[in-house]
Length: 58
Image (cartoon, rainbow, N blue to C red; front, side, top):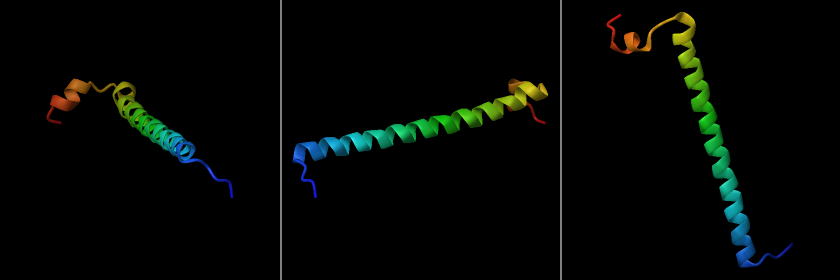
């Protein structure tokens, strides 16, 4: 087994944690973008006014 110094092990742990955080942020941003894209497509494709949708009664 390879023995790593405490400082080296700490740096590896920080790098791995940073990579995981970056991946999670990227996945969440992608999901938000996809949901917004499909949601806005309803307004543009069907010709529905967003203001009428949010302020209308029907």
